[in-house]
Image (cartoon, rainbow, N blue to C red; front, side, top):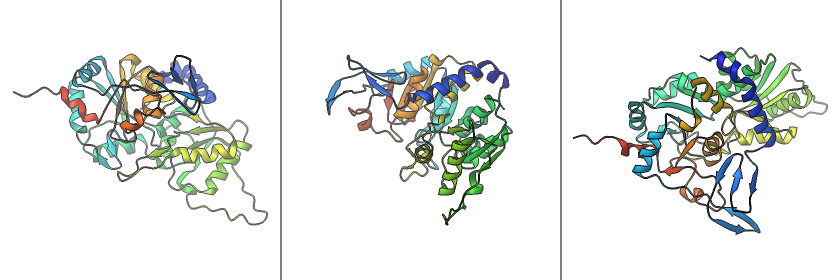
Length: 358
């Protein structure tokens, strides 16, 4: 259940930050100072500097978490925000030790929030997934990028139709805020023949195109989205996220929503408004809704360029787990300039804090 008062109080700040973030493409922009400190958005990574191909590269230094580090981090943290894929589960498989770790943190009085860029499910859908894995997590503790897309439109008083490149999660969340929508799974089987003189018509009342992960993306959807963005005055281009890969199964990585967004960026020559990590929109909503101090939040994730950057840009503590996308080699690579406060093999390493039974 959304807190309307939160939106009214913080609407302008959140929208301006989100739009500014997207317009300036801070996620992708890096600059290097003469002291060997490289900045990505507001994130700062320090370390040794090497030269490669005539460019200075700042290697991010991050300590591996020890038991004293774990205690210090948990003691200083009131709220933990967890990514899901690669931290809590991989595909449909729960990662070892997660239930015990979450139970331990709850017993210590910590607030737990789960944030995912995967837009294929709504919050109701993710509640069911948590339950199927034996985890007692409420809908109010879950923030998906499908929810963020709908919440963004609600926050700006959106009254037109939305065209969706994506799956049921986005459609369900749009229904929850009363936004009319077309596309989505209804366009999964549509084809374009490209016969001589073929012309595709589009709905001129579409005021936003939302692009989320879509296992049934096709040329029809790309063209329809392109027409809406290019030809409908003021039509918004919203991306739930721009992740390069995703864990749809526990067997391998799969091409992520960045591939879908990239297709429409290419055809429209426009940058999207990104509502998922690492953009600030979801973090601002969560912090405002629960009146949280950001310096008392710890972001736990498996991706440097989304989860850890999301935390760094938001002024949070950060912990990287190596149970998902990022390897220790990648973290320590000269090409990486994003440094978490700590890294560890898996979330369950926090179980070192569990009291020893007599």
